[in-house]
Amino acid sequence: MALESSLKGTEKVLAWLKKRQALGGFADHCRAGKALCLLEDAESAFLFHLINQCNTQVLELNVSPTIRILALYLLRLELSDTIKAHEAEVLCLRPILLAFAVEGLALKGAIQAICRDQTAGNEILFSDMKQQLSETNDNRERLLEIYNAIAPKLRLTPIGPTDLESEISVETSRKKDVLIRLSRAQSMAEFDCRHEAHELLLPLMELRADASNAAL
Image 1 (cartoon, helix red, strand yellow):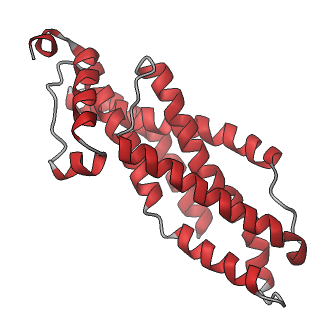
Image 2: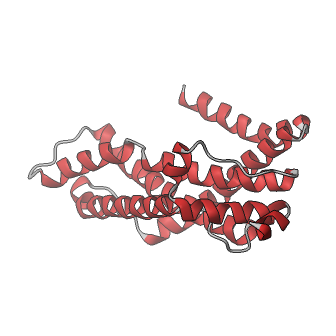
Image 3: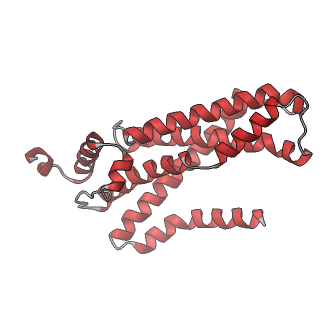
């Protein structure tokens, strides 16, 4: 306790993180009300919010119903002797699966980069979120294997390592930027730098608006 009280800024946040990780997973942390540590400055607040953002992103990725829908659809196609699928569904299948596989792997890469650049290599994920991210990516890899097995019958191009690598590189950088921007904006807003926080969030709001318009 004496050692922890002598720490300052981000060192205190990292000590708090290790203590919370030892007490249980992120789910336990949330149920306990996300116990706060004393945030002395904007930089320590940034790290605190970054920890919660990374773990929350993994949690949201894991509870997505999309993986169940895709799994059922692919299994139906795999088990059918005669594949009967609407042409529009078939044409959408490859890009959807590619984006789906890339999403989890890119999040893993973004969090690894954040640990390297922001926490001096300290693990930022709670144990349950680390396990969930690994299991989620394993499940998505299995879906890709099923797709690649039936792709010739669907007259579609399989998804290979080269397809994944090029997409993962771009998406990893984007996810890392989003996590850092959101966390930095939260910390700035808490320390009365609301204009700077808005400037950080503006590119994200513009991207969301563009995506919404494209969907119309």
